[in-house]
Length: 92
Image (cartoon, rainbow, N blue to C red):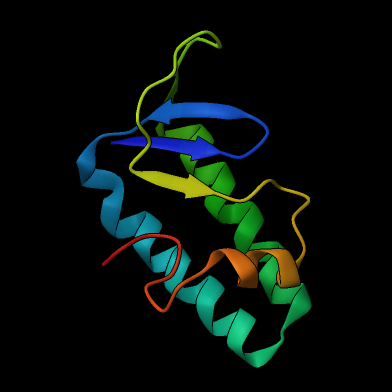
């Protein structure tokens, strides 16, 4: 799967990492729903770090269709709320 982090680039991840990323997405949604800004910041950072750690960065000049698009690390809770549908960042 190809994942884009807005403002950073794209990473290629094995589909086997989907469950781990989905767990972090579920945590992020719960924190957003409860308005937990500190938890939101921590979990967004963990989600982005997981993509960077588990994935292989694509070259800067590559432009592959992304299955997942994640917010930039500095995105606010309100900005991410605007991005989300009921399914979260990662479609289940």
